[in-house]
Length: 280
Image 1 (cartoon, rainbow, N blue to C red):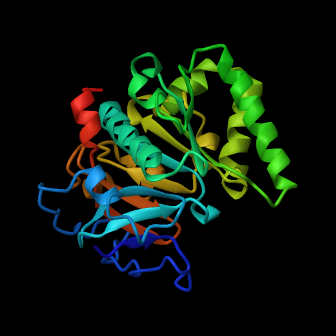
Image 2: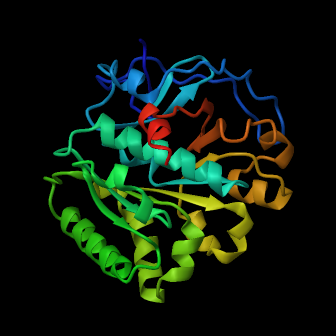
């Protein structure tokens, strides 16, 4: 299998196939034809990951059938925001990305942390050796966790030997925003902006229904976006730069638009067979 390594320097030893999707103009060109639905399971792709970076995250399958893989050692893409009109679809995508992170990386390389309203029902994740934190947004421990994460990133800014990389997955950015105190909100913003350069990546979801309940300043701090269907034109423009008609061509829960820097990819969601079996 030939891997497409996303956002890598072409001179990198991990570079396999340059990203060259059909250019999507912000305004309304057609999306590429979707892939067939008989996609491989996440576990099947990870079993053939010899060409992936040591620290990586499988995001999905591009229209040409190649895996889109985020190199977690390259901070250029920053933190990621998943946004669409369906909170359920966003949650399912985030759970599959978390599973890809847990299964695709050694615990000595990557530690994963979860803040989600579903924390009490995600034992499948929390039992993984490289999953360390699982809290609900309203838990009193969350402000303490954010404070400790800020301290860790600050210490790493002065130490070139970073050690483990970290991934914080937040399901429901609006819920977290409404649940924490002003100081914690400032720490969250600081982590979004400064974490990636210190080996601390964040991926958060946002249901557009609750967009007005979340700070626009915080949303703007996410340089990379994973966008699903969004009906309201103003929301579509604000979150993606594309119009709602363009985004409506995406198959809800199956296709997302990946936007980072000048790159735009239409990709299919890869599901974990274990998540289906666990009925999470």
